[in-house]
Image 1 (cartoon, rainbow, N blue to C red):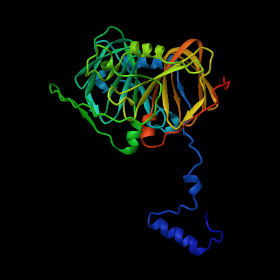
Image 2: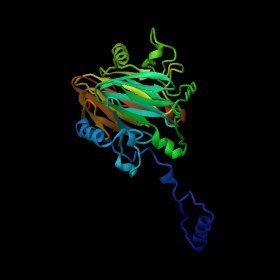
Image 3: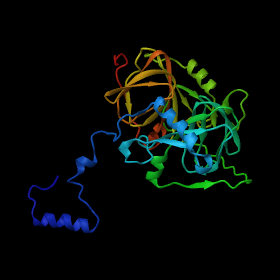
Image 4: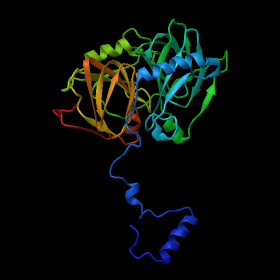
Length: 350
């Protein structure tokens, strides 16, 4: 707190501090040490019915030779034009037409691909071929070579998830194009797990019976559905699973932690809030969410955000609904910043 007797000497002290690029803490302590987090971005939804025409137009007007990747970035206006969907996370909708190739490159970004529509393409990650069919999750860890080739017969659209805002904040971006005809393979390191999880998990396809040991980048949708069906139901009827690294059994990537949630029809999920952020893709069904004091409705392929420290509860309308969630939960836990709270189990919401 500023001294009650502000005189010329005190003003001179403040001036002298400024000359030395220093500031007093005592007059701004309450602004620096806030009582609780307050996300700068409100929850936001990108409806598929609005984005699909934009995707189709982009495929007509933007040729692959003119774009390293044909992606529509989902940018929240709260971040002033930056490539950010919510804190620490960015998302986009990438498309590839039959016969097209997105050439190989690598970057220090951690990235995931969740197929929303179509199939028949292949993503090659460090020489490992990963089929891309609807609902599949494919990883491209930091500094792995990856390219996308579409030999199928229908347009393919997938959700791109990256830690771009975090990496920009840390100023740790590196990028490199592959040299044609030269093989580059650099396996990602094994990681320790930080965020706790006591529920069902799904490892990459290589951990399944009969799977290849080096198949560590793809999680087939059929396996995810089977694992979710076998997961124990919560008191609110919901089921959930965490996609995990095949070795550490922790998050699939150090900064991107992915989950699949199934909501029971007409039964709100237990309210929760967390210091982690999430970008959600509606994989199946439709429903609504009470989120940050507002109610949003959603259906298949809609994308919406759950910014940190907002109370949230989801309800399926009609049949069961499944939501894919990309979060920064593991990163927040590894930094010691993860905090999660839950409402009463029998609380009636929505």
